[in-house]
Length: 95
Image (cartoon, rainbow, N blue to C red):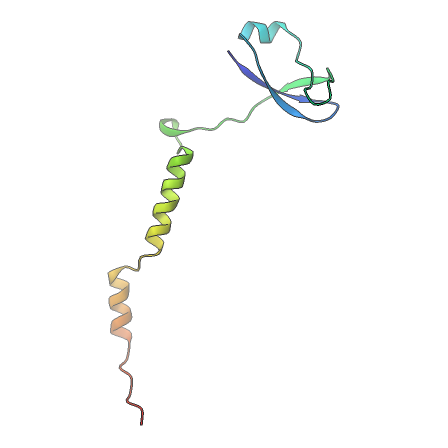
């Protein structure tokens, strides 16, 4: 049961239409625009997203990765702290 995306040539509205079968989609005229009712519509190529095991991260995986990166960015490594402490000169006593 495919869902095809269409755009109206009169009002430029883009919308999706659910077809009961690929055959019905191929044999039927494009559906009229739900916004203006025009029958001057054409099918457009929809954008796709590659997720999970197919080569990308899902939105929840992306959010978890960003959160982990933010947590790590807030932590100063021990080596950097030691370097800062080693380079710090003792303050002279004020008179």
